[in-house]
Image: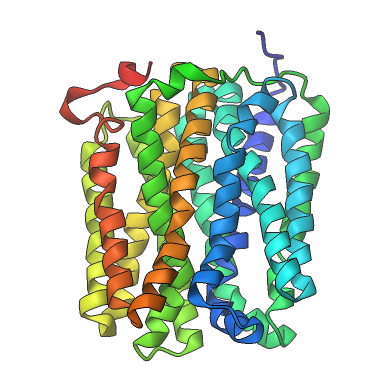
Length: 393
């Protein structure tokens, strides 16, 4: 399949659109945790039920990920992203109506649209700008973190300003609408789909499975921590505002490694040392929260470095290991599908352990195990024991 030549101005336009899309894929998650204690109190939700507010969208990410390549084979991805941005805006706005049903339904609708967006962007980058795949993936990864960071930092101040949590959850429909507007001219000019293989070959690939399980474990840890970190900090005596600030800080720190790790990874044949640094700093941060919570400011920095780096590594690995844009799309779909199904169990699991144990020590131990398992999961994908890029087939 041939691709239409694009005007030179489209490079900057594509980069801006990709970044804006990334900014809209995490406020759904980042805006919730600082307000979770208020939401639980207002709606009478248990910790396990509250965890489902993160689990539901993750299930959408996992279940719908395989649709991305199928749709990308038939329609230009740019047009798909316009529709997905509009649906994201609708679902996000629905959460602001108040009550249990709109909250859960809006979260699921927005999660479904986010799933389709997230799985096709890496393939679009590889197909439309292969020479800048590392930089664009880094920018995309950084924007994912930035969106969650802004949503987390502003949740409490906006709640105080609006006088409730409902408008804070709904306001993130506005940037989603902006993303649709930015993608619209690209969608009008787009004519070529991205060839994305679907089916058995990738399911038989050990490399693809390594990437998928790593994506699942890093996402499980990320979404579990982002969901429960404010309540963990509040249990150690931090105020709601301070806990929200510290949670936002760890996401702010993630921005730099989320951008840097894909760029560094793209310049190396193997990424084993990067994996060791990423997992090691995350473990240090979690152990610090468990053993010395008074130094939480320091541990937020460690967590931010580790989690931002893990996200960046997970996003770049399909781009590095796939032989062409089509295989990148298929490998990304598998990583998102399997990965987010694994990740979906995390927030509710941690909430259930909290309900069962009555404290946060055992939930943090569960988070430590999730993080440590990322090393054996990613070992093949990062080139451990000499496995290289040609092992992707």
